[in-house]
Image 1: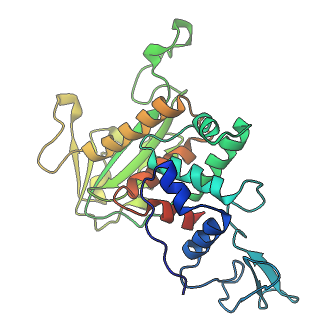
Image 2: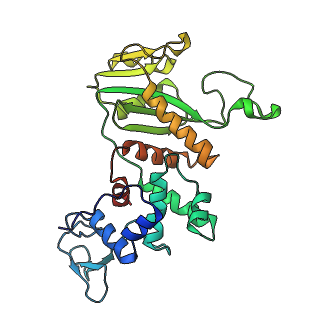
Image 3: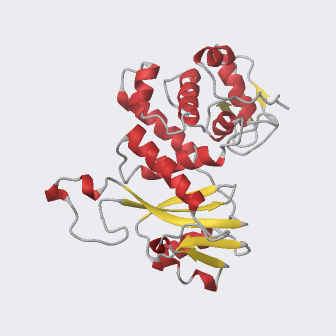
Length: 301
């Protein structure tokens, strides 16, 4: 069984260089994270693989191919078929995970000294894809809310302002719906709309029917939730934000992190790629108390 590496906390540049002084140190860390119980075939999961003496960090599986399947430590990972060393990948991942509001591809490019913005942008997006999580259904006290990501209408030029009003009225904004367990995980998803059907389907997929309390605001899409869940709503329009255990402050705190990161670090995010940024912020939030968040991310890559 491979020895589990020590947790990687937020490091200075000198500390990072000491922990990962060369490529072999990165390879050993990746192997230990990816296969904590010993190397397995990435195709069939066979643990009975053997080292190739002539090629370090390569193994062969005799089970899933007639002539044997040869694979390396990066086979089937986001690092495969790239020309960047693992040390660069690790640095980029560490920068993204330890920055509370995220780091833009332009910041990554400048810090890493990459000659191309496209290179930094591609690496960041591949890491974000790896950070997408499948979270078990939420229980306990759960808060559900929706938000809209995009520029404020009041900041637009007069001829670009929207002429309609209402909650989520601006078609140039992107809707995101989320659910969070008090002192637990968050699940957030980009949606086409926040109508009753879409919101209810999201809640059914992410929240357990055995939840002790489901808290929302008084938006019309939530009004029929009481038929399936123990539901309570807070009326923000009356100026009340907390009534006993009923509030949506936790999920609104997550929305604040997401929007502050997008506005402050990324400035502008397209509707197409917003799900990846939501995944990045969700992963950081769900691992906020995990001292080994870096190791958890590398294991997913």
